[in-house]
Image (cartoon, rainbow over all chains, first blue to last red; front, side):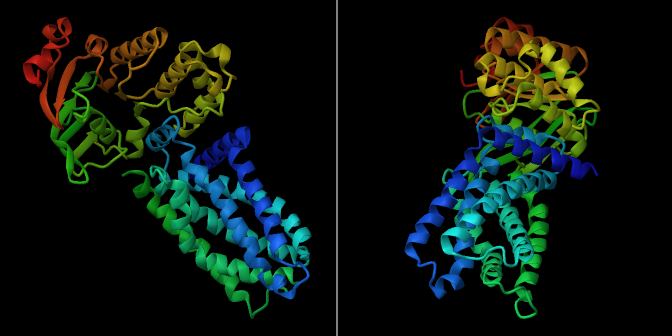
Length: 226
Length: 235
């Protein structure tokens, strides 16, 4: 109970701080919209190939836009040495990580939900065809992206080139989750529900989330205390 | 290693790569003592203080706060730290910052504690103002309130008087004197010898990562802050 309360305190602090400035949210949303618009010039929305790669395109945009947000997670603590105060406070490092990951999850999800209808318009994709299943895939893949991104954000917080290092470290780890999300999203926006034939991707997404959440919560104390 | 000590540092080494920033450092501070750690730039004061605070692990040796490790939850609850930064969030108000830390330290009534410390540091009128709009002196007083909010038994202060304005120095000296009178332990690193030695009961001189002197603060030191450097340091 205490753990969850402290997790909530950290999450609300991060959300409040971000929503006061909206720096990272605005940057991430602008990036997502610009990339979606630019890609729409490069591809013919009526082309059948477009339908088959739409899931991949969408998740590339989500991954890079999400990275912009997640990068700020621990970097936000640097200007006034707030990270020192958080590390020295009597809260479990796992609660600190989970609170930050949940705040990132909410923010990344908000950006994705704004970008999704625009993706449907620009690419002539019926994203509402299997909406509940698409939301499940988005929730699972976004959590995978935020939990690994947040632990790597902690790991790279003191590196000068952290903006570059975070995607370099995070994306290779994310390949299985992104692959699953891309495959499932392409099927779902084409109107095909998740069946036994492709449910293994869904199971892999669930497994990815469980495994990396457990590993991240276990390792975060080592990451934060050098 | 004294079992009664509030802070015990025993045979601590700390390496940055191959470079030993701390070399076999041993010292302690009894409950109610104020230990001033002095030394030239690069002597290892900040490294030692951060290692005591649990921000980094020693390569060798052991650190105990009231007999427990620095990363122990109870130890962290009993420790207050002021570093080079003010450790408050620019995007939050003064009140929101203190309530946040009150919740993180699981105080019974974070809002009440926050208001008490805002009053003590003279910030009650600007409690709802965002920290980014504060003057430097106001930010420093808020940093003091943040560090003392949870009534820590051990205070670790890294250059606490550096860049403070007169009012912030007065606030800090008042709360430090009250803390010492209340039996709290203070370990501070400082270059400002006059302010520090007015409070210190003990002095440790660090020289190139080693303890060159550790003992009680004597009248000679208070009368001439450079005395300890001349006697034990590099001159």
